[in-house]
Every structure is written in C-alpha cells, then in structure tokens.
Image (cartoon, rainbow, N blue to C red):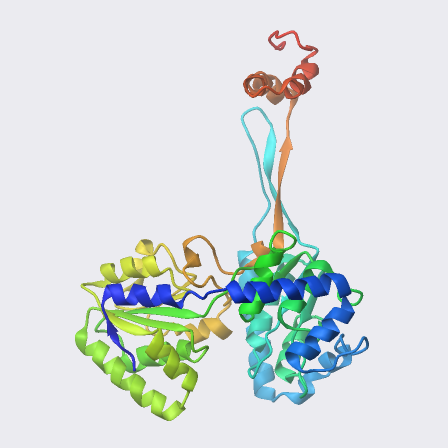
Length: 432
C-alpha cells in the first residue's frame, strides 16, 4: 500500500510520473485555432462539446449580484475562517512586497529599481467535483497587494449552482468579473481576448493537463505563473516525530490527486513501519480511492543514513512541499537548496500552509523548485531600472563606455557619448 523503496526505485517512480503531453498538445492546438477564429462562438461550441453545457452570449458572464450575495449561503464559521485567511495572506504579502531601491554612486549618479504592478490578470478557478476557495485567495491576494488594477476570473460552467464559498472568496478579493468558461479555451480567451472576455497581461491559477498545456502555449504572449503538475510532499522525520502525525500529513497530500506524490525519508526503521501501519488504518476510515492510488503508485518510504542524506535526496527531488519533522529543524535549513515551501517542526502541518498561514500555496511542482519559486507579489509586478547620470559621472565613465562601443563595432553608440563632450568621430579623449 505504501511501499518501502530503494533510492533507485524512488527516482524511477518520479521519472515515470512525468506525463506524456503529445496527445494533449494536439488537442490544445485545435482548441486554440477555434478560439482565435471564432471568439465567443468558438467558446460556446467548445463548452457544449467538452463540458456538455449550453452557453450563450448572455450567460458567459456570471451575474455579479450572485458574487455580492454569496455570504448569505455560507456558514458563519466558514465566513470567519475565510475572512481570517484573507487577512493573514494579505498581511504576509504586504510585508514581503518588494520596495523601490535607489542609491548614489561615488560620482553622484542615481541608480536603482522601481516596481510597478501589471495592469491586468486573469485567474483560472478549477471546476470538477471539488471547490477551492483557498485557491482563489492564494492566487488573487498577492495580485491585490501588488496593486493590479483589473482582475478577472474564469471557471468551468456547471449545471448546479456555483459554490458559494468560492464566490465569497472572490467577493473578499473584490473580483466582480467571473466568466463561466473553463479548460484550454478559457486560457486562450484570456490570452487573446474575445468579444466578451477581455485580454489580460498575465494568467495564473491551477488546472488540468489541458489548462497547463494551454498556459505553456500562450507563455510569451502573456505572462503565466508556472507549468503546474501533480502536488507533492517530502517528509523528513526522525525518532522525535509522531508517526500518526507523519502519516496524516502524507495522506493529506495524497488525497489531492491520484497522481500526487507523498514521500517519507527517515533513518528510523520503527518509525517507517509505524507510519505504514497508521496509513493503512487511516485509509480504512477515510475510504479515499484517490489517496490509495496515490500512495501505492507514486508514494513510498526510503530508509536513509541520517538527516543530511535525507536532505541531499530531497534536494534532488526538489519537492513542492518539504516538512522537517525532526529535532532542531532550523539547524538544517541552510542545507536545503530546492523546495517550494519548507515546514519546520512538528506543528507546522502542510495543511496550515495550504489555507491560513500566509504564504501562497501556489508552489513549483515536478522538480521545478530547482529554478523557480512560489507565487508572490513580485509575480504581479514589473521592475524597472532607473539611471540618472550627473555631468561628473558622465565625464568619468563615458570614455570607457565608448571604448566598449568601439570594440563592438557600434559607432553610433560611441557618437552618442562623444557628442556630449563636443567631440564627434575625432577619437579624442573627452575634456575633463
């Protein structure tokens, strides 16, 4: 059920989990062609063919009134929880927001970087059987903090009413534009615009393989957050860890998706065995088929020599989530190179991070934490360099810049420097 693996078996599983996108790519390209050629009519046709829902020009846009009235349809306790989550996420990103940085060099030249928000963002809200108000908050709040002027959302249409918790999360984020279009067609609508859905500058939000492939296709036309894959957690645990807590965290990750990956690295044989037994017990109670498939096909435990070896293996995996359920976890942080988010200590359950701690739960998956980071306000801002040269600074530096321009065979670059010194194509030194 939750196998004990060798190191080679573990990495073989991770390699095998990588999906073949060839058939998906072909289907997505056809969807793109229809959206580009037919606009809203293409969206309506694709929604009927792929989702079995009849849309029309008047139902593509979700009624803003239903967003505004959504809190009437959720419990007071859920409203309180979502309010608190919004406040904490906003506060965290406000504290982490990049600040303009300016300085003067020894010649009095002013240099630095200033940050400006992206104008517009489109957020994809997954459909399917589940609803994730937390995903709405984690994707949109950083954009709000960044100062994005226009935020719109898209989501697959449903025959039943829209989940009120998702709508309330949109209300908290002051999003009034929601379009009932999903799948790859929604991504192309956001990237290129249709008669009804406006084009945006960046697209964020999780989705299925078709959504991910569509985001890959439009990357460069618009900005995107990442190419998301199945969720994953690595738990490094020593003898101080409670095996029931370890098992619960592994199971929490597994219930996301049958392709999710939950990995335990430990130097304690008895802990590994207790976790395996506990997982079996939890599964019998929860009866989650997705979790069973995830744990059996993609999860597993690996016996390691010590915590340092566990971290070395984790760095190679580069997981989305890494939990250090060990004594003195801060001792090991400096050795961690690759992880989307690191959870330190026995009480830092990954589920806390998913919902309410503050940092966005939108994190790099499938080993991409080797070169990328979780979603933040910086993803919704552009940094611009500022350069203001003084006459003293110009005189001190322009000749050296001209020498580089000469070496690169760009005489007009050199001219633009020389002319400010009253020298044109003379090759003379500037006057000081």
